Image (cartoon, rainbow, N blue to C red):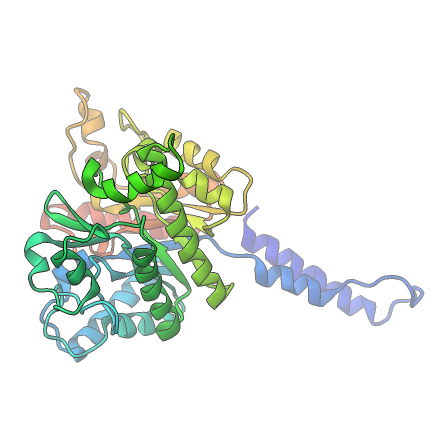
Length: 410
């Protein structure tokens, strides 16, 4: 029995009890149905989140060179596309590389949309909210600019001053700079842009994705601050030190959000491979659940049902075990970008062709996710559905039909 039917039964039972209550011959002291409380239960029941990510890649590919009027028209069309698909939540990039896709007094304007005099986030989020979508402001907290791009940063920008003075608060790793969350000043900087987003736009949520420490963080990335920490705790491993830094950053951002407004959600979309998440990115979702510092997790389970290493359904079960019986809501991140793509994964061509041979992968993974009790799904990303490559257009259109058919049947 689906939620909508249950709601209908509850509403009808309230109405019937109210009708007959008016002419009841029962004693007045007998307890009556609390219609107000019952209606509150109805209001609190939430439909599954059907979300989509709109990333800096979409801005880069689809929005460069637009006038404000052209961008407004683009946003209205994008929101219409989302609504038609069944999307009710938009995860909208605001900070990708310590830059800003909004009018910020802290971070410099993104170089991905140069020479514009309008506020992309304000326009896009307003259009989405007016259409009834929830909007989560999506940030990458630690990832910054490349070595080449650093030369174009404003000279008075705090990250530029750290780079120029070879300060360990920002470190280069394989050609790109990353903020070092071991330092309170760094966490305070990241927190300040979250505070700015909350105060300027009051989003429905603040959202982080899977970029924490880089996958191949060098040992000299944080050697000095780690040596100081070891003076206090000799047996502290580098891995535990880095995980503690991420945990502290997550906690501080969570606290900023909740101090602003308890109703604003704070969530993370970690890498789908839990071992990689912990061992390579030093991002431990078990800790966030235990510490109560996230409202939701959206693991990026970007693999097919037949994947030889991380098949979809067993991986989903692993993530269900992460949240356990906690209050943390679990959604699944799904790989719309994989639609129609052949992968070289196995000697078995059925495995390699899974995303080509089946034109209902997204609908099937959505169905499995909801059947397993997940609170929703989120698709990566907008352009995968609405600006596909020529060779995948037909299969993408079929995927959309399957998604809409499934959602409409709920």
